[in-house]
Length: 451
Ligand code: PLP
Image (cartoon, rainbow, N blue to C red; front, side, top):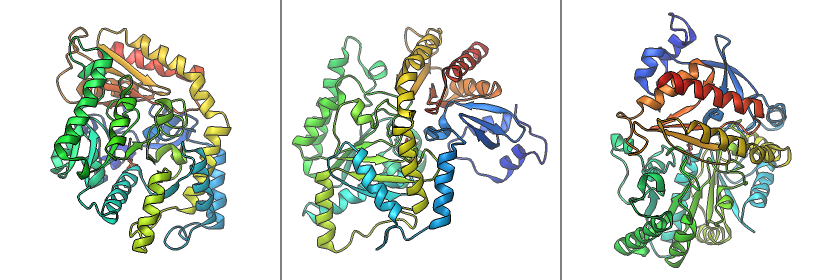
């Protein structure tokens, strides 16, 4: 248990910081972990306790917490040009190189990149691009956005409106014009006697119906994660993107892949859309883009949207949007190094090599009578807790059981994330076999303790 004595780091954190996305009753009861430094996939708290971080920070620390090359890339760039000269009328050499590199590693033959500080801002930026385009092309009514229930796209006002989570109601969101379609989770959403293929066909029919009801000419885009992350690691049902892609294309609705979690290797390919074999019109990237060593997001536009937006912006003589730190030279230098580390220094290979062990570990723990399903792709996985395995009845309460499992893991030196009724695992790509086994052994111990 964390230290809660007065003047401890834990007590000071609890007294003066305002937590978001945190189970506050649990913090009140148990205090919190205050991290001081990292060692590979481990973090060490202010009391010297080590935790294997099976959450990769927040899906982002794919190269671990002490990568010397990434720290050096940052130090060198801080010494050369520490900030700005980035985006408004000027651009740093690092930004030029990163845009070239991002287009090169994207699934697009050509494209253009716009930079933000976060994934939420990248999603908001994408929306403003689509809205700008609609007005510029004489279709100002093209404003509605289609997303899915359980999809997560961030916390700024538009990104939160795209997010299909009930907690957004606490803020009076979503804004009007954001339409959430059925989550493509066959295990939970499939009807009795419905095959997975029939389920996918039903979701495609739903999309057609929504487009017919709303009018294709009012819809600006469809935004989807290849694998839903914060929704509880939900891979799409079989053939999902192949079913919806042609419908969107036929109606002239751009498909935007939110690759904030999937991008740069998490699913075993560079991009989640490659894992699921579809080509979107644009990609939203963040997190592993800098291996978590700098806050940065990017909108990568494929050739058609890039050309149309460029033409619209040239006509208007400006695209009046951007952040003070868009294309920050230090962030770009780190991202260039991070892409090298993942693609050329063996991290993506390690994701592929570790995946069978990861899946076997998830499948083994899913034999537990209170685990209803394991899900996963590459190095992102989840175990969903159920009160009754046959009926899939969830435990009561929003988090409770998964929070208890995660807290017990913390007590045993393992950080993993409770999301809804699921425990999510998304370890850094540098994990060894032994560390993978340590992760599952600790989680198994926690399951035994909780149930
Ligand atoms: N999109 C997805 C798929 C995400 O998982 C997240 C964050 O977890 C975001 C967008 C928002 O990114 P950020 O937290 O950097 O704003």
